[in-house]
Length: 526
Image 1 (cartoon, rainbow, N blue to C red):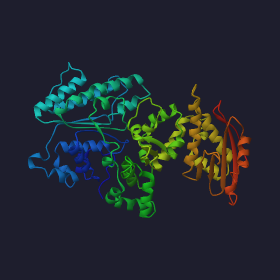
Image 2 (image 1 turned 90 degrees about the vertical axis):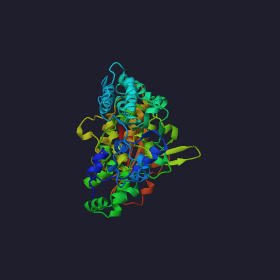
Image 3 (image 1 turned 45 degrees about the vertical axis):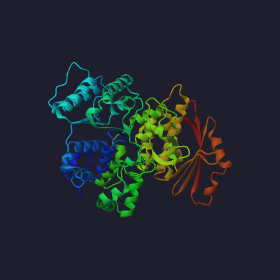
Image 4 (image 1 turned 180 degrees about the vertical axis):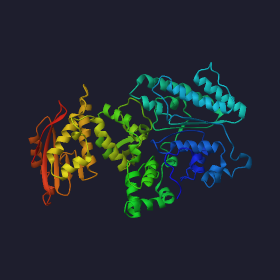
């Protein structure tokens, strides 16, 4: 068994130190053979940096690193004098940097360009601004080496995501620098061998996608849908022994372990016609720890996603039931746009689940249980960040325990505390109302991991039913009416009748919410 490459982003390190590697080099060969300039969007921790490193190694002619891989077969079939040619490779890795500082992005770009120029013994003209230094650098390296240059930009959008809706002035400054710096590639074609930009999001107004319009966006291309991530075939071929070890540690059959891996980590689709992929980061960590955890989700709170959600009146329930969007809508995310669907798709919290060719519309939902429940649990404290006491703060285990013990009042007290802690969005009534609706939905959806919980909105069904081994809870919510009226609706519409033959105790809970106060002002248990 080879070592698991957790956190390894260097292709050279991975190959020289005998880490497991799922061969993606055929995609690189196809990219190089078919075109010259590309853009690829994928969620974080999906292998974009390793892909950049692999492409860099290929263009540097590091032949020995590719022994036994698909691209070696193709490269070795070329005329001898055309094999494994080394080109100048300039990598802009933007995953780290002080991008909220006034000159943070400029310093990062300048430092990386300086390192590249020094490799070839070239001095940058300090009298030129940064974009013109870049232009001059490309020309001088080409003239000195006689070879075209490879430009690889990793996590291009990190400086924008870090400042979005946090520091508007710096966000605009970073956007302007991107426009001025990278748009010079537009008229430098004679000096360029290959160009690839990667990122999480495709910002349609950053200008590199309008000024640098020769970039081919392969983010939703069927031919490149599995360039990052691990397919089921790759999983079973490359990690069979790891699956066996996991199954033994979890005291389950190998078949059950494969099913659980799919439930937790599979389900990402980047094209409707292509095979789905597993999240590589979670998969590798699961094998390393020999348990099923939310590894990808726990590596970073999606703070900018939650900020955007708080600013909108988007119903989180839609994400579970499925939202529709055209490809054009999914491909372009515009900052400050209230439409969250493109952002949630590009960042990996929603994925393609179906396609209607008649209307050219995709259906999207959560890819798997890791993302669904991880996101919903993080949503609750993010929207309702403070409660009166630690005992009122959200705990799925505690709330499930209350329901298992038949303590409806304790459950309702915690739910009331959560709603009461939601900040008041002055002048934004739809946002305020949707905030507590999202918390209510998220609470019951999260409970669905542990008990049978169904959240409804149709008029002919109760708002929510929670069922465990001893109890059936039927909830009905009213706004600016009364708990008694909510309880009466449960009775009059016979919401309890489907459970009449059960020996479980039925508990009916009518709830009224005050829209003016944004809180549960009363409930009744029947």
